[in-house]
Length: 44
Image 1 (tube, rainbow, N blue to C red):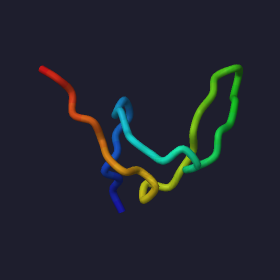
Image 2 (cartoon, rainbow, N blue to C red):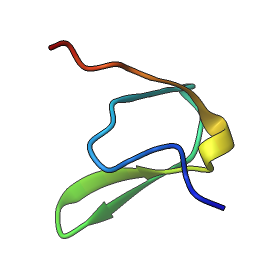
Image 3 (cartoon, one colour):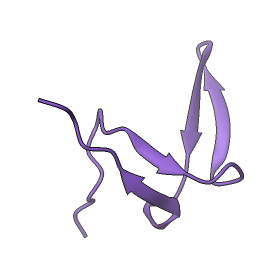
Image 4 (cartoon, one colour):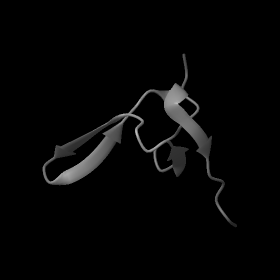
């Protein structure tokens, strides 16, 4: 299935959603797409 979320999207998610990992000193949040509550639109 194609994903709705794209690289660079600013997403909203709950405080306890997903798992935080650190790779090469950079922190990432990994979660299921269903945990995302919204995608912020970009101002033009």
